Length: 349
Ligand code: TRP
View 1 (cartoon, protein in one colour):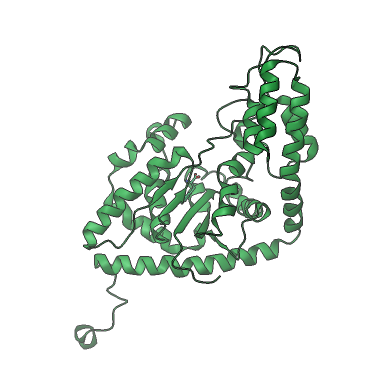
View 2 (cartoon, helix red, strand yellow):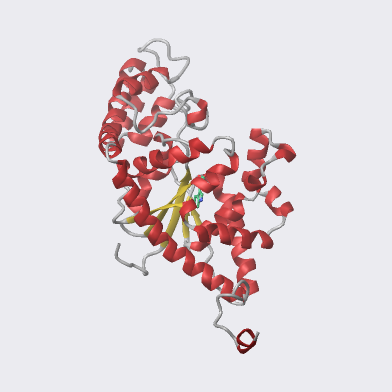
């Protein structure tokens, strides 16, 4: 990859806990394909972070690395334009994490709204894995190791970026200069794609997701399941567009906004049946997924070439993250004892 230091640096990534779905496509994958042309983009396969709440299922974390990598490549993340990095293959990230943990308090980690919500949602209480509690510091290590200034993440991750910047200021104060840049969260304007059951979030574990490898029949079945307006009983009745997730999906995926505006007007007026509407959505989703599924299947036939891509990405990632680590330990004046040139003192002894 050509070195393009003038481009703003992006770090983004996903925990490797399963293949990606349409929610990821809308929320992040689609924009990564665009951003790679204008930014220096690093995409992290976050297997180390995935383990922080999946310690009892390391096989899932490991096997998902290839699945997520296939998803990346299938949607058009291009290894010639973006660097795909496997987190566990970059030891500097782990070393920086250990370093950063000295600059953050347990109280501050527990106050992080993302962590607080997740402790609540999963019922961890005090039995929270220490690695999970500390993942904001680990993610700060990820972000700063690449000196990323832009971090595309979902809204729920904004407090992690805020905490990253606190750590950046704290570390820079310790070093005495602005060694690390602060980062900005890049939150998608389209918002979150709901599950096919209408629940706020599409999630594989909730069983309401459409995977990027979905067949036409699976897409039909998923669209069939979607709730529309419960009061729209006959096609001739006027229907409600707000809160009707078929329209939410049409807004997210339809290539032609004008067509959707017309469908909405027709639906509100009455005379547009749910079946017809759903058939149109299914068509659009199939057109979106078909090329991805095809590319994904072709790539999956050659896992060795995927491993080559991951190896090359790790190599590039290592250069960047090791360089930041070296700057930081130099700046802090720690951990350099044995790597320094032998002094008179050591020479004598
Ligand atoms: N925490 C992110 C998520 O759950 C994944 C992630 C790990 C990440 N390291 C990152 C995202 C660094 C952006 C930057 O989606």
